[in-house]
Image 1 (cartoon, helix red, strand yellow):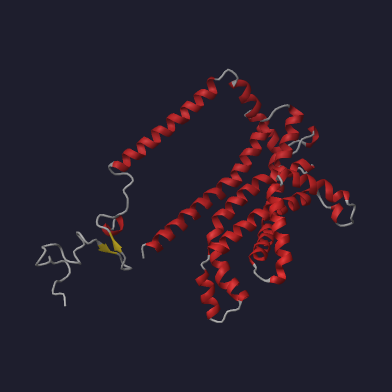
Image 2 (cartoon, helix red, strand yellow):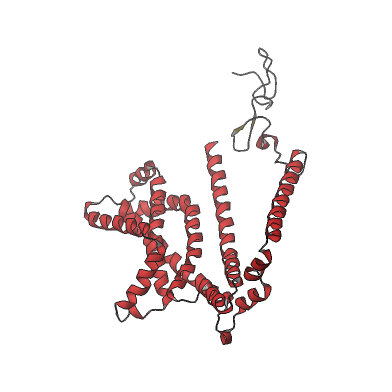
Length: 324
C-alpha cells in the first residue's frame, strides 16, 4: 500500500509524488496523461497576441504585404500593363458581360453560371450513386458477380484513361447521331451531365474502394459475430466508417467537378464559359473571362475551405484517439 499522498514528495527519492504534476505530468478530465508544460495540462491555450505570437503575426503580415506589393509593382510597371488591364480587367466590359445584352448578340455570364450549378448538382448525385455501385461490385468476392467485376474494372480503367473533353465530344455528338427517340432529343446540357457522370464516377469509385478498405476486418468480423447479415453489416457498420474517411477526398473531387462543368460549353450549351467566349468574340475584349473566373471562384472557394476544415477536424480526432 502506498503511504504517499497525492502531491507529497517521495521519502526515498525526494521526487514529487504521483499527484503533484510537476514532473509526472497532469491528467485531463478523461484521465489521459499530459506532459508537463503542455497547453492541456496547464489549462491554457496558445496566446496568439502575446510575446512571440505578436512577433510571428507581425512578420507574416509584413512578408505577405511585401510579396503582394512586389507582384503589383511588376504588373503595373510592365510595358504592356495598360493593354492587359484594358483587355482583361476593363470595368465596363466586365459589367456588360455580367448582365448581357441579347440585342448585341451576347449572353449574360451571370445568368449562365446557373446552368453550371444545375449541371454540377445533377452530376454530383448521379456520380455518388454510380460510383458506390461500382465500388461495391469490385469489392464483392462472390463468384456469381465475376462478370460484373470484370466489366466494372474495364469501365473504371477506360474512363480514367480517356480525357474528359474527349468523353464530352463522344457523348455530346455521338448520342444525338443515334437518332433514338428519347436519347437523341435531349438538351445539350444533359449530354454534358452524362459525360461528367461517366468520367467522374470512375474516379470516385476508387475513392469509395479506398474508404471500404480502410475499415479494419475486425469490424466486419465483430458485426458478423453479432448475427448481422453481410448486407446489414455493410449498411450499418462498414459504409458509415468508410464514408467518414473519404469525405475530404470526395469534396476535392467535387471541386474539380464544379470547374469541369465549363467544358460542356464545347457542345454549344450556354454556360458561363461559353457566354464569356461569345462576348469576347463579339467585342474582342476578354474581360468576360475574368467575370467567369470570379464566379467560379465564388463557388469553389467556400467548398475548398470547408474541405480544409473537415480535414483538420479529422486530423484532430485521430490525434485525440491516438493519445487515449
